[in-house]
Image 1 (cartoon, rainbow, N blue to C red):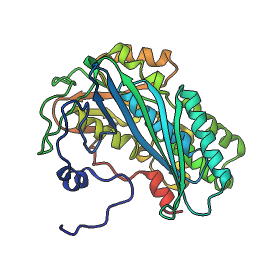
Image 2 (cartoon, rainbow, N blue to C red):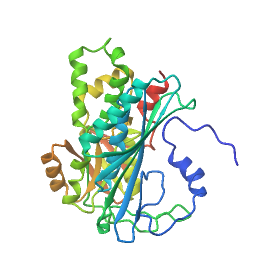
Image 3 (tube, rainbow, N blue to C red):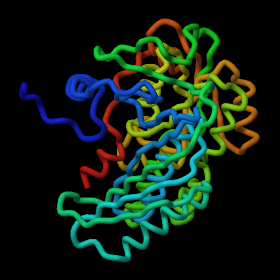
Length: 353
């Protein structure tokens, strides 16, 4: 095999996936709902009764016990974006050596806290101490059942050349579709930085400010809220903002829905608390993970926004889809084009500590 450079920190790149993963995978059975791709986080298959069993795998890494909480939100959010109501979650934790049992109890409690909030049952919980990890890693597999296969938002079959064969539900004509943001950019990353570096942050910010930041956890969009989208537009496409932040999510949405777009940068919802903490560490909040926040592609923007706001979720219009491939970001009079996804700022922050 040709020798290549070391992979960068964070999620593997689209280029690396296409070059080193796609060629190794064979085409599977036709009852699979989704095909493997650089962006696909869900798996599923149709049963003999016509139901669809769907699950999503996610993980979160960190040294705070609330790491498990965010891992649950990542996995449950991926299913909600597919219009699947989560029913259960299996959890597996890898601890570094010298970890204490108190940390295990804390992780279990944070997982249960998230599951209680989201109405999910923990179906399995396993843990292991491993010399192979430096930080605790919490893996969550969330599962649910979709009964109406006619409203699956996206069934992409990738042939052996890595091309879409046309089995996608988003319509080819994207001229009237809006891009809506639900939630806040970089919020999850902000909360996790506070969890892991509160003592350090106390040297810069007063305790009242940090308490205010902690209270923002209630602003994470819950799966039951994002499911409201599909009551308004059965052909909507939702995408959770994960690794790489909103800029990576915009790229991934464009790739999976086969659209270009034009958005207004100032419209991106961002909490001032996120701005201040990111300035303290010199991080870019637009490149930071934000599970519990979503992008939505829809041609029923008014109805979707109304439904989400009635459910208590923050929404803004970012812009519109375009049939051409250009991915345009406007900032006043300035125009630029979206770059390929960059490494997640939270991972960069942790790697330097």
